[in-house]
Image 1 (cartoon, rainbow, N blue to C red):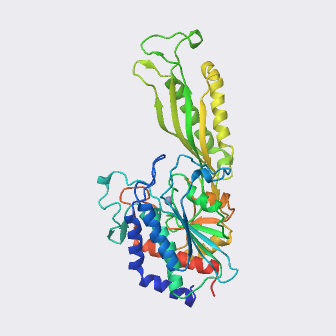
Image 2 (image 1 turned 60 degrees about the vertical axis):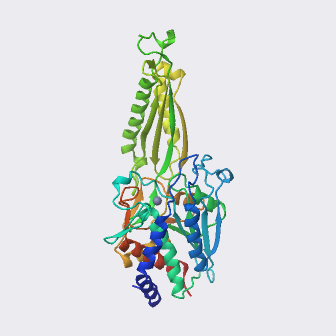
Length: 430
Ligand SMILES: [Zn+2]
């Protein structure tokens, strides 16, 4: 099952469990919470986190490059939404390249070091940025999503090197910000010219292999009305009466629900690993005074859809247009949709990197399943922009984005071992 060389690396990883845990604890200590639009990094924690990563990569022999992303410098690309409102200075990207000894296959390992906010502190019994170890689990925001995966990929390369092994193909490590908001960190790596024969993102997957992620369309539907006195019976709008935008918005929301019902059973919405498309109204703003007829409602929504499907926005717009056609006011004052789109992505289960990872994880843990995610990951840019097979394999995802997020030490070590095996087998060794 394992060669002698592989056994040597797996043993070194076992001997250094505590070091690997400690490394992840230090990463969790840096409060690298994804900022809101218009707000930048609130502290230098992002910079210090990346200094630590850079130092480890440099000590392992990687050539390290680091930069800040300027959204205005990113090139537009279909299905790669660029948000110009993001302030990403002082949230550097770090990329390390370890040149192989020859012409072996190259591998990108990519992870996001930004984390979602910790939420309500009282819901945690461990410090969200403490990295405390308790009953075989390491607690903290980002423990499983996905500083655990980053620690595993970096430590895997470190212990391959410590075992005196060199790979034939190049290893490229990318540690990026802003995945939880825009995925522009990875887009920036792609546009800077970094590519490889395959990529792995150690997002939490419960040691299964993530092959497919849905795309996302999110934005705003503006529904128009006409103001008037709320306590006065109104004539027809064509005779100058007020029009209640909330009543019209109710029709819009029902139309979106009809789309959900349609999509649920439609043959072109079926996928082996993914659910059909869905649209969800998430925030609604409307009205401005308790005795005035509201003249405007804004419905924020999020919608997820299958990879390879590029007609979603058109379909929603057509539905809104059909609705407007049934209502004399909306016919002349149609609802308006503004949205940003990110295409989904998938990798064929017959790709060699899938086979290689399948064998490695089977040897370290158990036979993995193939899975899909309803929500996208940075894989979309590696697949759609670079056109390289990209999968995820990592620890249990149960507590991602929740209070009391953790990774088990066992999952951390298994992920490290799996990635070490995949690196050696994929890139080849001397
Ligand atoms: Zn993640």
